[in-house]
Structure formats: C-alpha cells, structure tokens
Image (cartoon, rainbow over all chains, first blue to last red; front, side, top):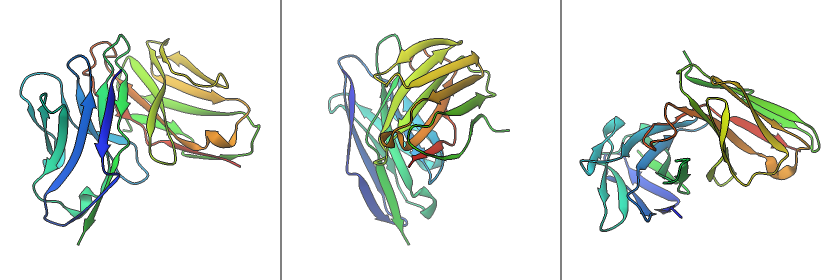
Length: 114
Length: 115
C-alpha cells in the first residue's frame, strides 16, 4: 500500500524566508508525486508534479520540489516566502493500481509573518 | 469560465434528511471524482467515474450514491444524513484516469453541516 507523510501540521515563516515543506512517501513501485495548494475556502490547485525524468521539478508561484528516491522524499521549497503563500499544502501520491487514485498527506498549513 | 463547479457552496441540514450535491466540469475530461475533507483537513477519495462508469468506490457507506448522467456531470446523493457526514466535499476531474499522471482539477467545495 502507498502512503504519504507530511512532517508538521503547521509551519510559520517570516516574509522573505525560505519555505521548506516536508513530504515522505512509501511505495513499492516508482511513484507519481504531486503537491497541491489550498487557499482559504477554495479548492485544491496543482503546484507541481513528478512523473518521470528530471528529479527537480519547478512549479507555479516560485515553488519547486526534488524527488529523492534514496530518501523516499519529495520536499517542497521556495526561496523567499510571500504573504500570499499562506495556505494549506498537500503532498499526494498516486496509487499504482488500475485506478490511479490520489492518496493525500495530512497537509501542512503555512503561515507567513510580516 | 469556471472549470469545475459545484452547487450548492454551503449546505446546512438536519440529521436524517436526504440531500444532493451537483458537480459539472467544462474541461472535456473523461474522469470525475468525489473527495471528502474532514474537519482536520484530511482528504480522502470516495468515488471516481470514467465516461459515466464507476471505477473507484472506496469504503463509503451505501447512504452515499454517486450518479453520472454524462461525462461532464457527477452528482452525489446522500441519504439519511448523519452528524459525521459534516465535511467539505470536493469534486474533481482529470483527462486520464489510467496513466496516473493526469492533473486533477478541483471544484471550490461544498461545505455540508449536519445538525
């Protein structure tokens, strides 16, 4: 069975500081990995995804993530936080059976201090 | 144009009632999904349809019945509502359900409160 673990339910950073949101996965086969963002009272929006190829993936709004197979990780980073980045961030992995459904982590709420 | 829309946005109802949530996508996608997000923000898939055919049916009480009249619509009917059904329900769609790489596009959510 596949699963996703996000370390830390909350992360508070100052505006301009580095953002690092951690995600580890377990999978018996190569996974497809995703990061979604949920702004308050909205649906989820895809930030980036890794399927195959280059392990460093760039997404929208200056975010990027690196797939590290040896560490079973897919951490999300942004060099400089903006106030508008305050949101809930979800890491997800597809389940490698015929249904390919997304399995989500528990989410990390990012707070950005002025 | 809204890509994935849901109605209603808010739904407050009494225990024991029957209610429906509607979802429509104008992206031309073949696959649609229903997710439930609980009070701790945990998201879990409930159902998925591909071209009107049910392909994912998680361990969901049979009080929940999805219906897909065409591939652009996926509705969720809930019978005999219980307090534990209070949650945010998200509809999503994707072009491809078989390769695993397709991006899922989410609707704005329906906030259901059962009193």
